[in-house]
Length: 205
Length: 205
Image (cartoon, rainbow over all chains, first blue to last red; front, side, top):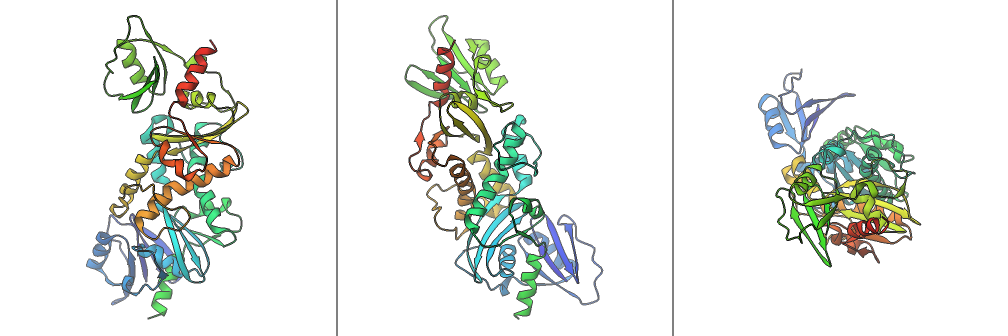
């Protein structure tokens, strides 16, 4: 069993099945006796909680990504290990964008997650409290507040990802990854990217 | 005397002098007897507070901007009235981007302000609590968390503004407007744009 632990959720993979559970509770897993959970975690508290009930083996020391980036999150590193060349967009509580070329990580940036943007607009002014609309048309300029906000979150991200990608493939992952597919022609949505990276780490043992 | 009232500050102009005061207090102004303050406000409470002590004349009903945009903030509208052709970036508690062509407002979008971004990253994870660095190099990919965050806020905005501007002039205003000047070659920083719009409204009476 694989478990990737984020800021808000445990993400599990066993066989072909992928599911998630809130980090606020210890997940109730039916494991074979002595079965090990291989983990990657950006959330120390949640990792310790899991380790109190189950046998865990943390893959972090075995991550082997060719990069000059200092302090890359283990989730980003694992996802990058699953990609040879391309731009990875992992849209969760933060949206990370990483560039891979021929197995080398060239760098990347961090954009806030969509839910955070909504909170942030509401904090600026009650007039800006709007739901994100993924049907927004990026080809025409916004003509009201709702459009101005959806466009204001999505267009800057899309525009910068396209500028970095040029002709490289764009791979989308994370809870909100699928929402971005329509803005990137030919992009790939792959919700198991981090798990693929984890499997690669295990194979390299 | 002119006064533009935002979410956080009163912005005054009298003669050539421009200054601001927090909206939390009634500003202490030395006015000639019977002198009128011409106002534009996105903050009803703060406008009422000013009107309790001084004689105010609100310019809002006299704004005359050619646009199809529904619900454009009066501050944005006034700034747009001061520009014939160009992209206006007003960087305050929100960052608004508006496109003008031959005196017509074509639309615009709303990006959160820089201070909001910093709060937002800190809320996602304590690891992401970093100060914005305006010396960040947008020509090379970030290689650590600090760079990834500064780049992640600035590069998407810069990239989308450039995509919209093409060869139009870029005009920067608002408290954080000056910080963006180095990212837009040939851009103009003009902190009196809204006041210029207000003066135009008064002239058109």
